[in-house]
Image 1 (cartoon, rainbow, N blue to C red):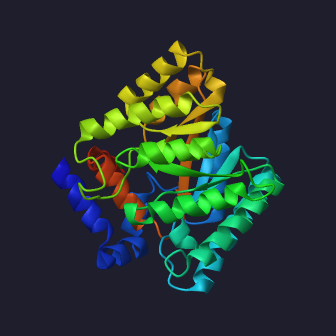
Image 2: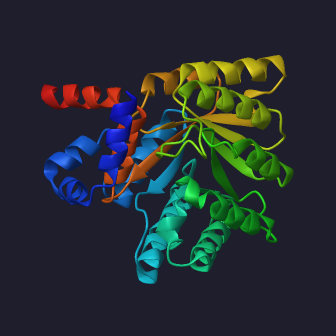
Length: 308
């Protein structure tokens, strides 16, 4: 499985395969398990369906590492349109944003300005912006930008970020974010990282996830636990039960197209669930990382393609 994971991570960076995949009908068909569609309207339609099932959503317009300021502003405009549509349709939804899509690779000031404008727009509707975490080389700058925006007048609580349990630094980062009241989505992490910065063993990543989960649930801030791992979910439920943490004080989060049975089960048990719904034409890197996280998805997709 480790070899397959490494292979899919490598493939996620292959420009030739990406061009072929994103432009071909077979690629679009393959991606449909994890990607809601190519256009905003596709994502909104899926969001409404998920809301009707008793779950919240977080919408993500796929794309990374823009190469011009114009591209960054175009990417941001999609999110502004999303925020307007979410409010107009009264969806139970927020948005998830990658800073490299907002121009971080060009200028941290550019990305911060765009992220702040999005946060102000979200706050005007009583909504929320989640700044996604990317690879470890961007962890510090991402956290710095989120903390500065969160500290600005009127924006406290309108922006949050993501912490990855496979990084050694994550406990210290959580301690700092909790002290400032920043909302956190906890995940394990989906990038290939060196042993100098990340736990190489799955057991250590899992143990850290549980440790960080307990820190989040023990805080008064509302957080999201992003996992499809039944053991991690059980650990969270056990800690919450033992320490009197009501289900309304946190939410579980899962990816669109992954463990739908478990999503419904948790909702039926009274837990809050948010489904992360990506959409857009630049789906290839995201899709390959989903396969890297769980190579069994390859066989699942192949089986469903053969059925059609």
